[in-house]
Length: 134
Image 1: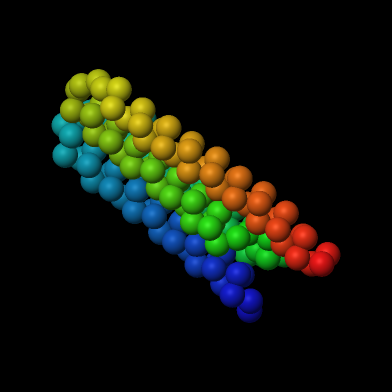
Image 2: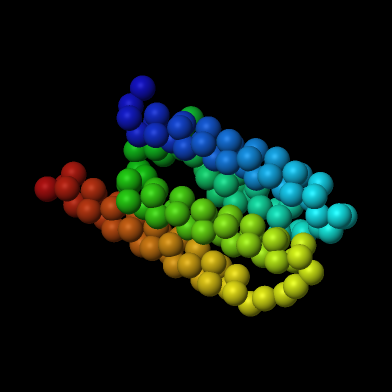
């Protein structure tokens, strides 16, 4: 099995494990919150599952794993991690009965990392195409 396919498979397993951890953490946290719930915490598992596990599963079972560079891969996962922490922060604040705008930096930071991942992947594809032609 090529190293890039193994990397995608490991990322898929890690994404599923993080999503499961988020579900368990949310369940336990809500048990001690005296009936208060947060939609942000309940949807926190979607970031690692939909953003990491599913695309990596597709990459592992198809030849797309050869196209993804290491730097864009790391930037993408960092952006998803920032969004996950943002959901956790907002959920904790909501459960505590308060409201804050401080979580906005998590959403902006996540978008910055995801945009940087897309730009790096485009550059990676362009450079790899020019290397094969030369």
